Length: 394
Ligand SMILES: Cc1cc2nc3c(=O)[nH]c(=O)nc-3n(C[C@H](O)[C@H](O)[C@H](O)COP(=O)(O)OP(=O)(O)OC[C@H]3O[C@@H](n4cnc5c(N)ncnc54)[C@H](O)[C@@H]3O)c2cc1C
Image 1 (cartoon, rainbow, N blue to C red):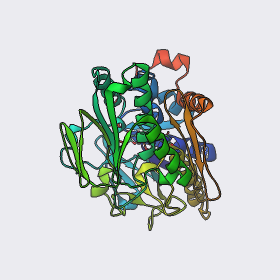
Image 2 (image 1 turned 60 degrees about the vertical axis):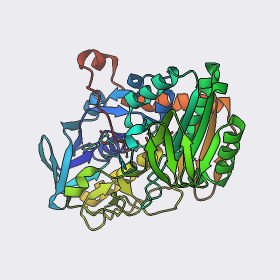
Image 3 (image 1 turned 30 degrees about the vertical axis):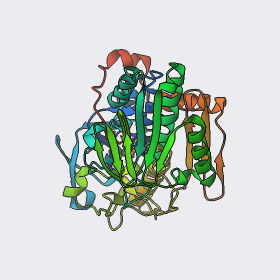
Image 4 (image 1 turned 180 degrees about the vertical axis):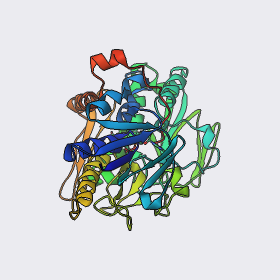
C-alpha cells in the first residue's frame, strides 16, 4: 500500500491530506505535526479587541483525521533525507512513497532589538498580549508596521497588519480614547498593499489619512528600541510597537536533501512539485512558487496549492503525468471589527470594495464555515482530551 506523508496541520496540510484521501481511497496517509490542532490565523486580528479568544480559533483535528482515515504522527520534522523518501522527526523516522511539505513559514528575526516588539503572527497568546497592553493604556503612541523578505517578495503579511491597525483604531474609538493615541503605520515599502492591486493601495492610503494615522513609508528599519522604532528615514517614538517581520521557510531545510531558495523556501514549479525530486511537493508559506509577482502568501493560496499538489501526487504515483497547475488568485477581507473591505485579484480582475458592513459579516461567516469542516463531532468532543495548544510559526 502506498504511504503518503504530509508535513503540517495547517491550511495547506489539511487541504492536501483531505484531497489525497478523496482521490485515493486505499492509500495510507499520515500527517506529521507537533500538535493535532489547526489554528485559524485570519481571525487573530480580532483577539486584541476581545472579539475572539485564542481558543475560539484553534480546533482539535483528531476527529477530522479519524473520519477521513488519515493517520497522525506527533512530532517535529528535523530533516528530510533519501531524496524525500525519509522524514526524520524528533519522535522517529517515517518512510514514504510520496511527500508534501506544508509546514508553513518562520519569522526573520535579524532586525536588532526585535524583542522590543509584539507580533500577532505568533499565535493566540501574543495577539492576546497586544490586547492586554492596549487595554492598560489610557493614551500614548502606538507604532504598527511590517517588513518583507528582500529575497522573496511574497513572504510578508502586509494585509494582516493593515487589518490589525483598522481593528485597533475601532477598538480605541469604542473605548472612547482614540484621541489620546498617536498611531503610526511604518514599512520599508513606499506603496504597501500592491499585491492587492493598485486600487487597493490607494484605498488603504486614503483610509490611513481618514483615520488620522501617520504613515511612515519607504524607509528601511534599522532597529527597535523600547520606546522607538529607528528607520533610515528618521525615528518613530513609540510606547507600544507591533511589528510583523518578513518570513522565511522551515528550519529543517538546513539539514535536508531538498533544494532551498536564497530566501529559505522550498522551490517548486507551477504544479507544486519540488524540482528534481520524485513525488515530493511543497505548498503554502513553506514554498516559493513561480508566477505573478502579486501572488501573496495566503491561506487561500495554500488551499489551492494543496489541492493541486494532491492531484499531481496521486497521478505521479499512478504513473500518469502530473500536469495540474495552481490557479493564481487572492481573496481576502480586510476587517475593522464592524466593516470589511473585500479584495479579489486574478490575472484578469482586481476588485477592492469600500469598507462595508456586509464585508465584516462575510468574514465572520467564512471563519465559521472553515472551522466547522475540521471541528470534532459532539461525541468526539466528549471522548478526546483537548489537544495541547502550541505556538505555531506563521
Ligand atoms: C494575523 C494573520 C492574519 C492572516 N489573515 C489571512 C487572511 O485573512 N486570509 C488569508 O488567506 N490568509 C491570511 N493569513 C495568512 C495565512 O494564515 C497563511 O498564509 C497560512 O496559514 C499558510 O498556510 P500553511 O499551511 O502554509 O502554514 P500554517 O497554516 O502556518 O501551518 C503550518 C503547519 O505546520 C506545522 N509545522 C511547523 N513546523 C513543523 C515541523 N518542523 N514539523 C512538523 N510540522 C510543522 C505547524 O504546527 C502547522 O500545523 C494571515 C496570517 C496571519 C498571521
